[in-house]
Length: 201
Image (tube, rainbow, N blue to C red; front, side):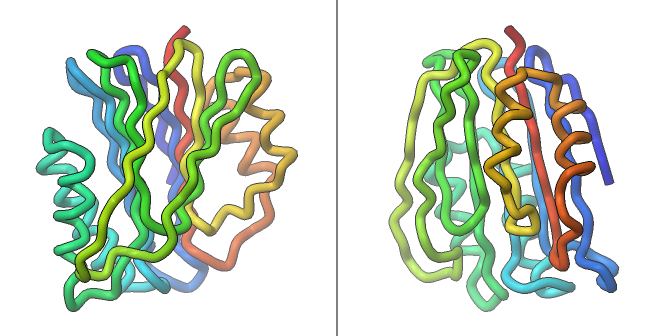
């Protein structure tokens, strides 16, 4: 499934497909633009199939209903929801329009890269592990955002080739970048979710 959205100064294109042979994906995502912020989240339930879907959907459903909460609280509450579930990895990105900064929080192997208009890239340091319901601390990373900045979030169904960086340095639209990625990437034997976004210049 491919979607393209224009969200008041932020353009986002997403791709989500289940592992071959499965009727549902273990990946889930959510994004929203309010007057004060843009927030997006991606979760990947451990394994694949229905139990992975249940775990990722629990996290994303909570975020969808409570996106006004601060990022650290969202991560903590999603972690609590994983008790007696399969568990999930999760990344949340929030662009705060008042502070002009990006807030990033992660547990697990959701890939994330930001591309500045200058061509420089910033790859946040992910935290190892996964949300399991056991108490854990969450580390926030912050960076200033710039107009014209692009980003990618992806589950481990995408094996990110370093050549893909060149698609972002050309500063094309998310729709164009995503289509180029899909044309170039190898078919994965896993659930795959890709989100490409760009802040208007």
